Image (cartoon, rainbow, N blue to C red; front, side, top):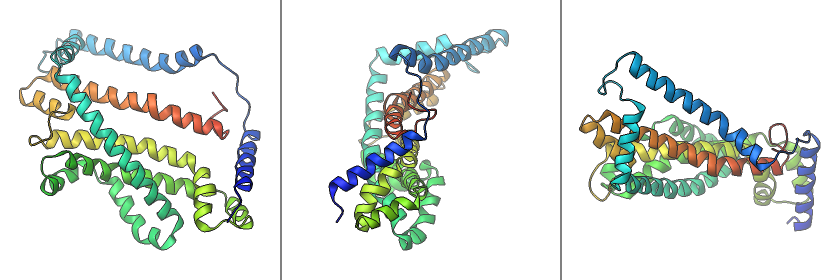
Length: 293
């Protein structure tokens, strides 16, 4: 058993060495940091909308081919005012968060197991890699037969999409851990479990965080894929079902509006929740690009 003070000293020493190899960044005010982060995508979106409107006007496109930005915004506003869109957003986001939380637990445990137990990695690793490239939508028909039209169907599809990317991200992070750290752990008397928890896992955080971010993308896609294909039962109406309903009545403005809402939710979660956590962790270890920002 390694003594807790020794482990703390080692973590502080590791973080200090990382900081010594990183150039100290220039300090910026919170307002300037917010502007530097938000302004480029806002400008790009504005230019995109201008180009969209120009294409509709200059090419004289009918609403059946490409509705104007105003028509799409009107469809989104009408769905929001009727209460349909807020309920659908709450349903889909709730499912995504529940499934993603489960995927984090399962994916982290699986990743540590694959990274630390070589026989299991040789046997199970290729299967997990194969699952990662399998589209989540492929699981929907089978999950419908196994779980019926229920939330369990969506959760299963989310797990099959999120777990492999989280596990493989952690495995990639562990593979990049310098072997000297493991030797230090052995010298200090740490067993294999303590090495995995106190040394390997913290050192693998950059790769793990990348896997977590990718896992959210796969989880969100899984929710939408399940909602688009599976309709009825106790599933209710999520954003994916709303998209499908607009397609069935050939409401192209509604279809594009639902797509934009799906895109906005995915980006908002990434920028508001995952990216700040990733920056904070990397900055704490002196691994933020160009130093802390």
